[in-house]
Image (cartoon, rainbow, N blue to C red; front, top):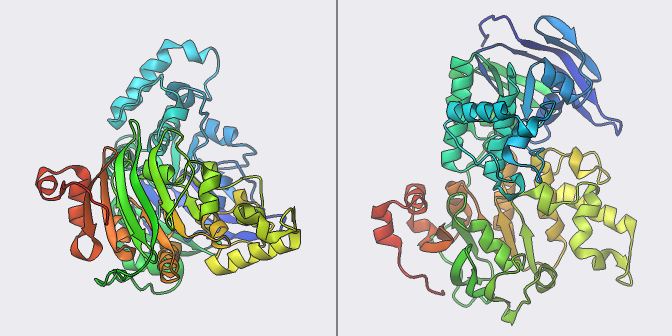
Amino acid sequence: MQLAEEVPLMRLERITKTFPNGLVALRGVDLEIARGKVYGLLGANGAGKSTLIKILSGTFQASGGQIIWRGAPVQWSTPREANEMGVATIHQHIPLVPALSVIENVFLGASGRWRRDASLHARYSDICARTGYWLDPDRLVGDLSIGQRQMVAVFQALGTGAELIVMDEPTASLATEEREVVYRIVRHLSRVENKAILFVSHFLDEVMALTDCVTILRDGEVVVRANTCDLDETRLAEAIVGRQLVALERSPAKQVSASAPVQLELRNLASPDKLSPVSLKLMAGEVIGIAGLLGSGRSELLHAIFGADPDATGDVLVCGKAVRRSTMAAVRAGIGLVPEDRMRQGLVPAFEIWRNTTLPALEGVSSRGIFPRRETERTRGEDAIRRLKIKAPSPDSLVTELSGGNAQKVTIAKWLFSDVKVFLLDEPTSGIDIGAKTDILLLVRELAAAGKSVVIVSSEFEELLAVSQRILVMRDGRCIAQREAHGTSEQELILLAGGQSAACTHAAQPMKSV
């Protein structure tokens, strides 16, 4: 399938990248990007997407090959140089300044006395009008949700006036309505403003709907380059993982045995202005899914269970024993949390894989329970790499060197070597490719089969249906409905979560402990 010939805004020729540790990330990648088009860049975690983006945006230097920009060879040594030439990148891990306001972050690179420049407010209003999305310009970024911070990053790219906008997983942490805003922005920029868009996503449906052309990387090489109209989601998925995927079957109708012990119990767990009282029982070997839209209270519920909310009231019991309200007490009781924001809350970026993996269970790798044994820790790191199929040259790799999906696997791996009885998983497959997503969902099933209890939050309701026995639906900080997974559908969950009156009439019954 040949693409129509166009004059490219940017052309990458035989780009290679080898890191000092010997990892070969890119092996002679060619890519052409023209104005007025949306280009999809796909690949499994570790395929080379992030490395390629960092090279074309000036963060990394290529080991070989050449970048042609507007017909002339260029060599950017910093992201600022690339940005000044007309390339803006929206990274998966949003590099914003929490202590500054929204408008200060949007125009962070502006020179002069920009914080008091009234013209910037006019430019900010123009961006809001173009996107149809409004954020208080004076609100601190540190007070925003992940989805709102992602929109600030989009605004930041638009504020530069760039000709090429690179979007690395721009919708991974967004609610449905915010995703629609991004889709509208992408279409407007390419079709109306004649911008070039390089769009990285693991959501195959949005790739099919938004992009004109698709390039797929596997193991640092281009394996597919085609017009999107010549492909379908099945062919995309198979090209990404290099094999045919078998869809996860839904959980069987058979429920966990009534004789199974109660592993987690919540008694009127609540938090002022965040979470209305929730009571439930979770059996050994049971998986409960939490469905809801962004801001519904899903993460707040998990944080309250984990003891991370100092304002929470009510009781959390593990195996019948009350747990003090602190994260340390929760870990000692056998509760493990995989947070939504992995880099800020789930990992220590300056640490290697092995050091992150053993953090919650240092007693098990220490002499006399006091002095950590490095070789034992490294062995744990190697076990984690093997068990979760983490793509890394060795356990000595820093987690900041990993792709988003592989870093997420480390956040999960660190709990596998502790005596965790209850796993709290907050968007564990966010920003993860379809192959790795399947691996993690299968791991959830394995944990349940081993007698662990799992509470899983996901914006992808079909994932909840695939692994859960029960699904709780949250809205405005309240659990407004409960469904047996085998007796509901993705459509009903969407209606419940969105507050449709017909669904609410049927579902909004008082929650009972079960």
